[in-house]
Image (cartoon, rainbow over all chains, first blue to last red; front, top):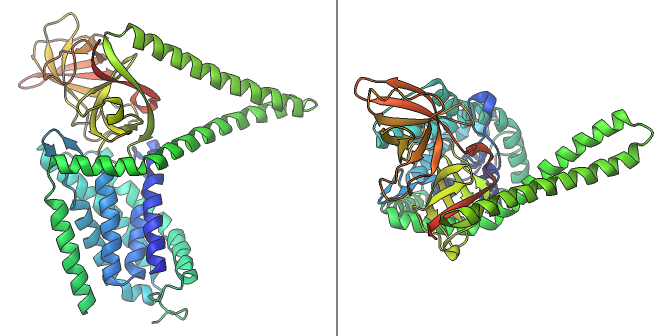
Length: 180
Length: 267
């Protein structure tokens, strides 16, 4: 439970930090997202009820930060990011047997893919609302770039979070020999 | 799936359904509350970011001093740092003087505001300012600088507001072009790879034949933006099948905003 609270705090802080990370102009303005990496680690290291709570919290933060209420309409309703995070975190949770066997590389790759999946879903939703679907090179970079960066960040982030989990005596972590 | 997971799923579904039922007003209230909650973090972060930028500029100057004046290294370091600090102050004074002059000569009632954070999302272009309901700011108020139009307020908290930038596709402004009878709608692009994106001026007549350098102003149609605010200058024009479209370079550098004014009414 302590580790779950730590992950909640880290998720909140990461969401604040993301405000101050400028887009990468050499990558067609792709952005760096830290929150998904934390949530997807939590999806492996926590039991399902806490995974849902963490995904719900991260989704709520994302919605609160990005939602656009213009006049009488809302572009993407509050709740969609919660659902999105929950589905993706549940998929990651389903891959927990690999995590227990020490096969972290799958989750690192999945973290990147899921980060891009969030951005792709947002893009599809706003395109649907705005009435035209346009995929330019910039759009692909802004969807794929953050996923690629998340993939690169994941090994170090997972290692730090795993160490924190051990320090916090997270009972749901696999045993040091690699098996529960 | 065990019992606790099923209960958790049930609670999760109920909370999700609750949030999905939110309308525009509830969403605005929720977002305003959330931004009010995180505003101390954003303001602190903004301050730290400015300090870091200032320190890194100072360090660069010290490196030059070290290379050029090995014998007077220590003294020069101190002088350069002082000089840099004074330049920062001078820049600040000039900026505020310009802002004050604009505020005085403007025909609008203006509330000065500082940018405390930029958007953290990929698909929406917004900034957060340190003024809100306490300063009589409401949603859908124009935001300007002395150079031209910046955007409009959307969600307003007690001491913080979100400004939708002109470069966002959702910020649509009725515009006219100087020296012509042409009127159209200015909007940003959904996706752009540039930090200073161009705007599209749509629904012009095919015969408009606008020339680069012509200025575009708000026409006042629609009620949100008063007429006569500079939007930008025409970069190019092309006739499409049904209408004409011009590309506009915004008058304000939206990627380097520091201070803005919210137009709360006429004087």
